[in-house]
Amino acid sequence: MPTVLVTGASRGLGLELVRQYSADGWQVIATARDPARSRDLAAVAAKHPSVEVHGLDVADFDAIDALAARLDGRAVDVLLNNAGLFGPKARAEQDPRQEFGTVDYRIWSELLRVNTMAPVKMAEAFVAHVARSAQRKIVTITSGVGSIANADGRTLAYRSSKAAANMLMRNLSFDLAPRGVVTAAVCPGWVRTRMGGSGATLDVAESIAGVRRVVSALTPVNSGRFWLYDGSQIPW
Image 1 (tube, rainbow, N blue to C red):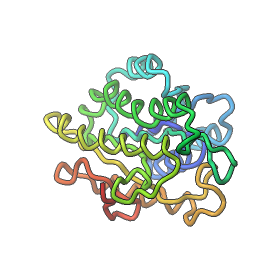
Image 2 (cartoon, rainbow, N blue to C red; image 1 turned 135 degrees about the horizontal axis):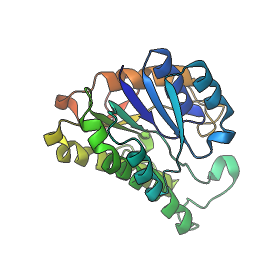
Image 3 (cartoon, one colour; image 1 turned 90 degrees about the horizontal axis):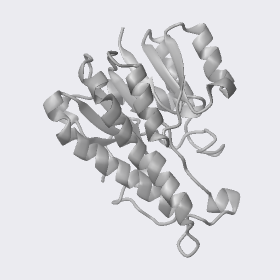
């Protein structure tokens, strides 16, 4: 059976990725910062023996290397970099620390580490696992607000971290092509999760079903592109 590795799998999009892939018979390697407190993830793992759960904070790059070593020799068909942070929300939380004039640069640095650098670190640590698989795909869950063409201001830290992640996935499509590895940046849409809020337009199951269709359709010909969950492309 094919294998998918999902980071940030304790809730929201990551948890739904685990649910859907395991229901379809995939071997799922799910990571969460605190598995002992991830009751929903534990419930899915109890229902599907093909799900294994590992503790991982993607901001800890030594921990990423340790997990890669622990899984040495395994093949990972799809590496899904889902773990991410949004940071303070000026409108919903009345917290302006991502807004021009009141930027908290410590928070910005944290978002860049998790949203931008961690996916590349995961790719570096697991590229051998991916390259030995049948499908050989590395995908980062990103956001449409990382589109420079569609930029409209605000949330500077989050937007820049996602724009940079998109650029890196594009570059990795060239760097990893000799190893047959395909990459993509995929936006799940505006989803009703803790990050997206209750006013979002998509439910989690619909979004992730679309993300999975995009991932399934990836080939070396369309590697390195920026996709919306519905299969359309987002301008850079």
